Length: 287
Image 1 (cartoon, helix red, strand yellow):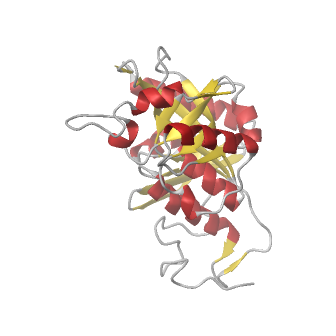
Image 2 (cartoon, rainbow, N blue to C red):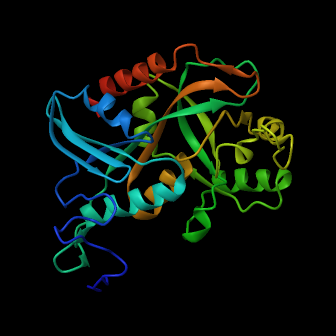
């Protein structure tokens, strides 16, 4: 087995992985990710028992139990640059022997489920709905740094996007079908656009216009096999892409707090997020 050098996988003096501060064994096989560190406690309050907590930088981790199932929840912060750190380091925690610095002989596959917030882009779509990301379109710039095999469906979406945004390098990543089927018992499915920022890359304009100025209108108009892009956020495609190359199962569950086309925002966003967490936990028990 090839030894992984100290500069490639940085291990802290206490044996924990560099950024997350976690040791092998600290994570459950099902990992919920949230952006906001303060949302970790909101999620872990739904657990029957929390037996491990760790704070390291913006990365807060709680591991506990619901019924007889172990669950971890970890904050990623905002954007796919942080997703690159979190996905690679949680993979190392379960698939690398930190003592010998070699890959484990038996690969361990995690369930990685994002509980996030999002904005809708289709006219008249209702805020406060909960939406699963069936596919995620990566405009964040992360995917080109990894080698991905694209399915025909993913390639078709990439080609469609090339027509409207020829200067962008596109990758499209699908959710795990088993997780998607399980959670679609409760939630509707949609297609998600993962942006590289919150303002210009999502078509927002405060004092200066994004380029192109009508970016949201273009995105909302793209159609492939009677499907359109439903929502926009900043993490999902990074999670799906890295889960794919690292051999994990991933799904994003999104609380839609805004409709960008109609200019509407949820009257009670905290209640919508709490509903998403509660309904997710109901299905986690039977996962």
